[in-house]
Image (cartoon, rainbow, N blue to C red; front, side):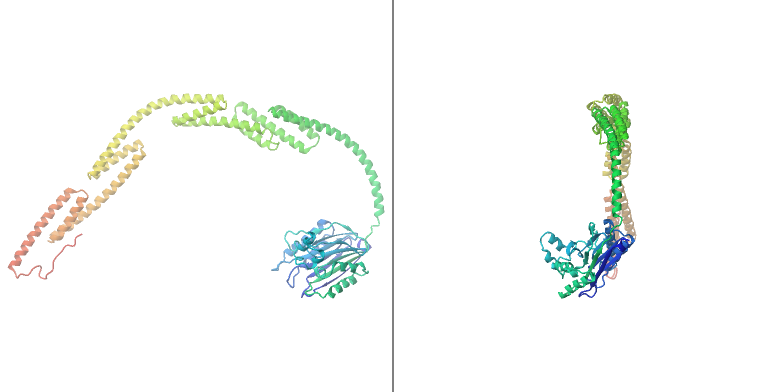
Length: 611
């Protein structure tokens, strides 16, 4: 019934100015309980930009779906419109300045972004005005620009907040009480860039009863200036002739007074009960705090058993007081104290592995109990760690002793003894002394055996070295097979001695010897081939060629140390020389008795080609 028991009249003008398309929009909807008025100015150079229209449609739709005038609702309306513009498919993102007014016909609230403006006139005077979200407005606020220069300043459209911008930050006003005769005006920059604020105030100082008449007056005033490049302009006026008056207001006030008296009496009774209850609680709290103070005192003395008893008392009192936070704190203290006592039990029994785990658990619990006894826990963990280092040294010494590594084992036992003495760990020190006695007993027997083995090994090394020497001598004499035998026997002895250096050295010698033998065999085959070719040349009585090939074969045998074969070849060379001389003698005798022709009848001579 609010709308029908009030009187709001709305009129507006909206033109494209000197532009080809009007991108300003104004819209409103009046429901039974609430009314919504919205003006928007599209920010775009595109002719058909729909930013303002889409923003107003989004806000009106959101308002109709969930009408209200709370701050949260206005912010949701604006964010809905912003999301709509951000989803635009245009290559140029849609943007708009916008002001929205919500009223319940008694009060109103507004929200705005950008540089559309709202003015409220009451009794012929400007009562309320918005400020632009622009760099120019900030300069006015900082007193670097006068108010009268704002309309023409170059940064007036440089906005820091507008619809179509990520992380929108709109301004939402408080509620304002309306009065009969109020006039709310909404307008875009096409108006305020060309019409002075004072001139608008003069128009509404003498306003009539019809808002359209005042809108026409504003338009006439604008057009009389004949501005160049006139932007789109929109002007809306909302006349509040009569606000809604609640008929049940007086009855509600009387009822409120009666209820208030009854509540006052009840509150007095409750107050007395609360006083008694709080006095009892105060006493319990004092007792609780004293018990906890005792807990802390016992913890300072490392008396955790008595500290646990006092902490349990404090916890019971916290439960009676229903102090959940304190109860949780004291419970964490109690759990931590129990963990420390449990760890101490293991420690006293000498079960250090279990004690360490228990102290680590207590350390974790201490994080939830103000890190109580952290120093005590860390000291115990340090001691356990030192004890375990002694145990580890003894265990490592035992392992080395099993491996008959007596020197390193002795070092570990001695180190364990020194560490145990340093931390006053008598049991650990005694264990180290016992281990040393056992070590020295075994080591003495082993040393005797090692001396015998060393003597035997020395003899074996001398024998192996002598074999290698004999192999080297055979190699120098060219007896490669003999050298190989000595090297292989020597390798077998060094392998038994596990002398890796000598094994590697002999392996290299054997590899080199094998390569040498292969080289000798190849050269031997080459010499035999030369010897065979020489024999064939000798059979063909080509003595010159035969001699050359025999000489090559001799050189090959000499190179590989086959002196016997070389001497044998020399004998064949001597035979070839004899045969050659005999042939030449016979040839000379034939020439004396013939026709005196020399050679073979055609003047050719035979020569060897060598190999």
